[in-house]
Length: 233
Image 1 (cartoon, one colour):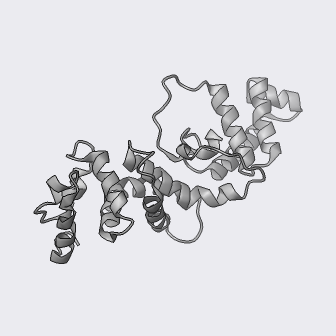
Image 2: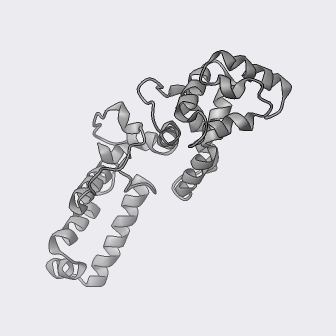
Image 3: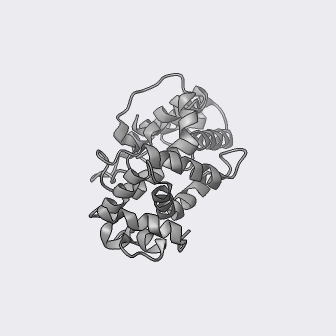
């Protein structure tokens, strides 16, 4: 598509848009438009928002946005290998990216557009269905799907652990596994927890590793990522 005359004529017609005009007027390769949306490019977030708005009626605009986020999307989706059965995770993520592009609100989410689209696509592809299976739904603002900057102060370890355990509980991890993690924390070490429970240290460590595996499987490879809607809830 990059050099197809019919496609290029369609893209040149977008020159009425002042944000897109500097790039699309006389464009001869769609790669130039993709490059312009990169960090440090001539348009960045402004150009991506214009393309997303056009994508409602112009499939080519959606294809350009998809091409822009594709490297990061593929890289992050591969972390889900082993967590998803059936189709290739990259295929799932690309399909979800179309939904993310079509549903993106350019008015309220004007910054860090590419990372936000990737986060939305991963949520739709790998987390949304499991979120629907939880017993208790906790309303959260729509903005939790945005890719947010890290907090200025590092989250305290105990606060991080408590949030992760709450998220794991909502995701269906058995209470016994979560209680074991809490026992180890309260005891201060696996060896002390083993003495308190009258079992061997090896038993405690084996159970701890099994519980950790269940938590990671339930929350996915980004389970410690605080932009995750499950953890934020």
